[in-house]
Length: 390
Image 1 (cartoon, rainbow, N blue to C red):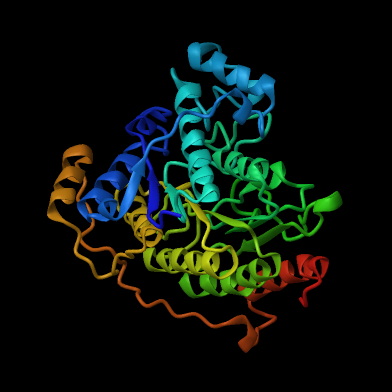
Image 2 (cartoon, rainbow, N blue to C red):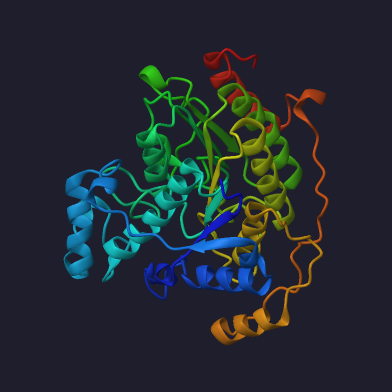
């Protein structure tokens, strides 16, 4: 075990570009990489590229006909087959789409391989976390589901239990679907309630099927949930399940779109709370998974103010050199932000809410509180299936 963490990166991932009017602006990846460099975080880890995921790897999750449809749309975007979710408003086809999507998938699979084989204890691919893609179709800005592919590769390599924790504001529906009947994979998603947000799934009653019953966990948070409620929900559900499951590897998805400035959703979480969950995931990996941790990015559409800072914090936590919230952001990065976007970049690595306070679940709950109702619904739906007290 080298002990050094790995940052999976290839400049070509910025080619994952649905066009100038699309909210998933690849500048968010470029600015994150530049901020990581400006903060000196990449000096504390190995920066590693990986090959694009090949045919056999993609077919660990995706149907062959879908992969062929992506290739065809990549070669001729105007002829994309919309029956596969390609060429739609959410997932416009673009030249080279297959190649860059396979590259992002390859980086996440490479991260999983490095952690499993002991080349690194932790690895991060902030260009990944494309959790909506289904085995047979694109969805929600996601072409290939790199998170599912990384998990499937871990199982192929011999992992017996993989836990997946998704804190994106949107339900991790594609990963849940990929392992719906597989008891080897525990999927946990904390997200805005499906009544108010795409993809309208992720109800607490969705718990898996067949041998996998009890292996899907969904916490549907009320719109408007802020730091204290978000952290309370996380700690009321995730640690107990991870402690019971004891995964060989922990895979986490850190979409930054829970933030109060994100334009596409309705939670009110700060950068400081996002950092707190990143630290908690790191601790869970060490306590229950032998330290083996694969961290991914995800959604996030406040592409200057939020995403680069959130994922730079994630990289710092993965590298073992967490960035202090009060850290002043280097002026060199802020100049790069203005040159690229004509926007003024943030000045510090905090929203001013550190340390974030929250109340533990075992201190008692309020049955009339909507957040507590959401947590209780999840615990009642899935905990007894796992032999745990709701």
